Length: 268
Image (cartoon, rainbow, N blue to C red):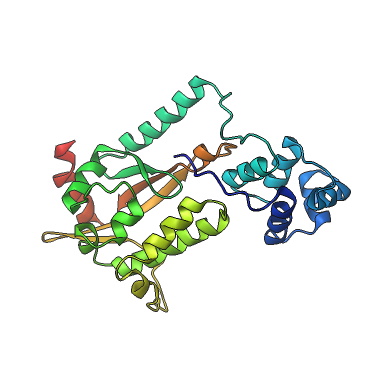
């Protein structure tokens, strides 16, 4: 779940100023929020003062930046990233991995996966493995691409166009929050260039959309309807941890629940 090295066309003062404007802070407002003086923020933006690791962290948190973008600020200022700081203990790593495994395993017989910031599959429970195989998943590690590209998974979705509008909108927002994440930007362009994706994105949305957008699959004579919940690791200063997402899928109706009990549970 590593990030590509960000490019460094922007120096720290320019990058800080751009982020401040995007976050709609005045220098005074940002200074107050970060616990710094307005004079210091002004000097940082003009390059008259060099930032400390502490001031960068305070500024990034004040602007509510993703951990990966705070890492970019660190790099442009000449510091090592916080994500590369391996001082946290092996016990903590083990606890996090065990917690993820527990969530995924406990969700059987319904699918559950752990993905990174660009939806590359990191872990999946047994139910997800069986269900994806039934859908005809070809092993593509990227869950967005697996849903959007032509193939058996896409063909099995009854509401494909409606669903990808929602997924692409969420992914575009995430990419916008991380302007230095070139890997994510390149994936977004790749997805938009897949057959029929732009056509689906241009379709008009319903005037009165349902409160919950489900994923509707057709498997043989069965209609499988799922909704999902996403869990993240809370309060992390590490971009790798912040990027972990656990998506758990739930049956949206009784026939779907019974289908999983009869067709997935026996294989676990």
